[in-house]
Every structure is written in structure tokens, then in C-alpha cells.
Length: 312
Image (tube, rainbow, N blue to C red; front, side):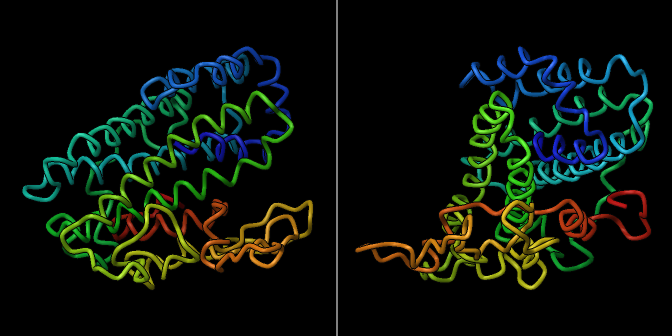
């Protein structure tokens, strides 16, 4: 779950959100000091308690905040059904990889429960949408997604890479809150491991090519440049490209492509002495954030035809 992206989005419609959280600083301190105990399994309960305390006194969530949480809820359903359907598909996921995928699937289920608990009657639907609400072929772009191992993990890589970028989008807003930033660093490492895990599966898959420079065939466990457009360009190209806005001033929040090599106005490749850094190496040093609208446009590829509710 993109917890800090959510908080960033909520802050746009509720400027007092940090005041609400600051009044419960012990909650964040609890996040930050639990270390390894803050796992995907424990996060849902902590997150639910956080929002209950922050907004519990208002009774009804502001409409804008409910919209933010509902988008997150829809994304969680998208991911849950993807992993759940994959696990139920014969001869798709190798036996050695099933425990890891089952854990990720169960994480998504927990996140759904948390978000539903926070939204209550304001959830976009009072019942779970069926798996048929989603089209994992991406409108026919991936017709063998649940029968072809390479296609399945290629699509999975697109989901996790999008999630990490969306997650990173909230980090600048967290800077003034040391407790929250510390919590973000702890939890971000878990999210990054999910992405690395999926990429590692693809890297070692039977269909992987021996050419390490062909990143969309045999990817590294991290992103280099724009990753050759991902597993299925041009469909997956936006996952690694710029968001909106793509550029901005020194104090602005903007969303450059993953190939960005300039950080805080400094060219990472050229601003060195006696050290040769490649363009790819410079881009690998940072994960770039991605804005919510771009994330939604990517997600809409996977909603069933005629469905205008999801990711609206």
C-alpha cells in the first residue's frame, strides 16, 4: 500500500492532516521504533488505527479524502486479484516462487480490509468488486497473462515498479516530520524488496535472454534509465517515463522520468572527480516519484471494458 503517497494526496485536500497526525506523534514513534516488527502483516492494523485517531472525531470523511482512499482501495483490488488469479492458474507460478507470491497476495488482502475499515459507508462499493471488473489482458495487450510465465511476471513487474514510484511521490512532503520520515524509510524498504523480488524472478526465468543490456528481457533487480520501456513497450513505457509536471523549480514537486540524472540541480554523472559514472549508473542511484494521475492512467488499462467506476 502506498501509505505515504496517500498521506501526500490527503494533505492537498486537508492541510491540517499533519496537525491531526502530530497530535498523535506517539503513533508515528511507534512506527519508527518497531524496526523489523513493522511488516506488511502488522502495517494494516497500525494504518487503520492511525486514520481512526486522525479522523475518528469527524464522523464522516471529507469527500476529497474519501476519493483518495477509494482510489487506493481500487488499486489494492487490482493487485490482489492479479496475484490471486495467478496462484490459481495451473502451471503458471513455479513451486519455488509460490510462497513469495502468496505473501504479496495476502498483503494486498490485508490492505483492502484496512482501507474498507477507514472508509466505511463511503467506500466506492459496499461489496467487493468481482475479478471480472478487471481485464488483466490490458485490452488484449497481454492475452496470455495467466498462461505464460514470462508475460505474467512482466505484468507483475509493471505493477510493482509503478507502486514504488507512486510511493516515492509522498517522500518530499514528509521531510518536516522526522517520525513520519523515519517510518517511511522503514516501510519503503519493504516495498522496494517486493519490486526487487519480482524483478529477480524475471531475471532468472527460463525465458530470460543472456544479454544484460536488454533490460526488458533480462532485467536487473533495479531500474536502469527508462528500463528500455519495461517488459512490454510501448504499453509499459509510461511506467518509467515522466509524470505531470515533469519539471519544476528548486522547491517544486515534479516527476521526471526514471532516466533522470540530475538531483537537486546537480548532474550526478558529470559532477565527479576521478570517478567514471555511466548515464545508466547515475540514473540507478535514485527512484523517481510518479504523480497520481499518471498512475491512474496506467491502471485504467486493466479495468474491464465498459467499467467507468474504477480509476475514474
